[in-house]
Amino acid sequence: MQKFHVAPVPRIGGVALLIALGTGWLVLWLRHSPLHTAYLGLLAVTLPAFLSGLYEDMSKQGGLGLRMAGILLSAGLGWWLLGVQITRLDIPVLEAALRYPAVSLSLTLIAICGVTNAMNFIDGYNGLATAVAAIMLGGIAYVAFLLGDHLIWSCAIAGIGACLGFLLWNWPRGLIFLGDGGAYLLGFLIAALDILLVARNPQVSPWFALLLVSYPVVEMTFTVLRRTSRRSNPGMPDAAHLHQLIYKRLMKWTVGSSRPADKLFRNSMTSPYLWLLSSLGVIPAVLFWNNTRLLQLSTLLFIAAYIWLYRRIVKFRTPRWLVVRDRQSHKDRQ
Image (tube, rainbow, N blue to C red; front, top):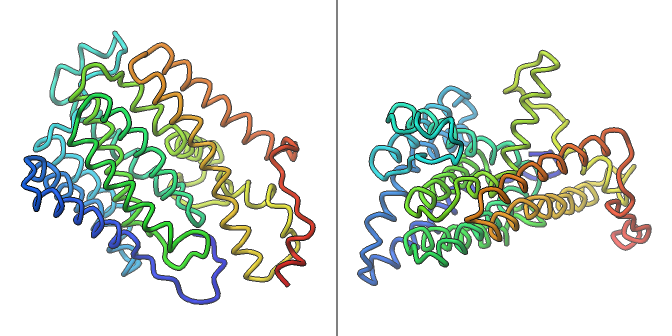
């Protein structure tokens, strides 16, 4: 998280999200819904990933190894107990290999770990990761509703509600932060629901699951490749994420101002750019959820658009229609 705040800000937003998701289970239980057991099981397997991140938020001593262990434990429990398993890829060469449980387990662990960490990668500005999560959960909820998958639909709707409630406090003022625990909670929930939707519904193309999370996954992959090419530690933070470049080079109205209020405003107005970018992956995923060829094409187009935008900003050739200039905004905030 970028440092723009003059007062301490709590980093335990994940606790609020977990309470909200738990309230969703309580509603199902009070209504005697048969879904409440599976819903509770999903929340339970999320706990190792969430707690490993929360420990880091509160103690600053967890370390990457502990957090990775928590995510892998959650993914393994989901695979074993809830059927959160990748069994289809719509890639002929790999379909046969997925028949072996060890291959399915390995790929599932990699996918869940990747998406969970990717959500933490994009958690850099007020409202960014949480709103992106709500957008992706909206895509999952819509397709689940079309297919009549009430479990996935219920979990996704509860997740959307939790995100929107958190956003009231996080964006634009940044009164509370998501923290590693919150980012891991949302990342794991999205990954698990994404995989479950494909596993439980043969009509859904597995490329829907990939395109839906394309923004955080491409951001993380591109970041790791960039750092590796520079012979730096892929796990060490830098200031070259796409959202950081947008903050530094597109938010023109506060350039040169060091006032905390201006920096906070600039922080919060960075996020909508990435909400739009994430939607460029989610919208075609929702439109073509059962068409593998169009989903594959949309995935390639999204990757190309990300690289094009990143390169244009790096080379100081940002398209003018993306640059917001407001000469009066600084005066209005005096």
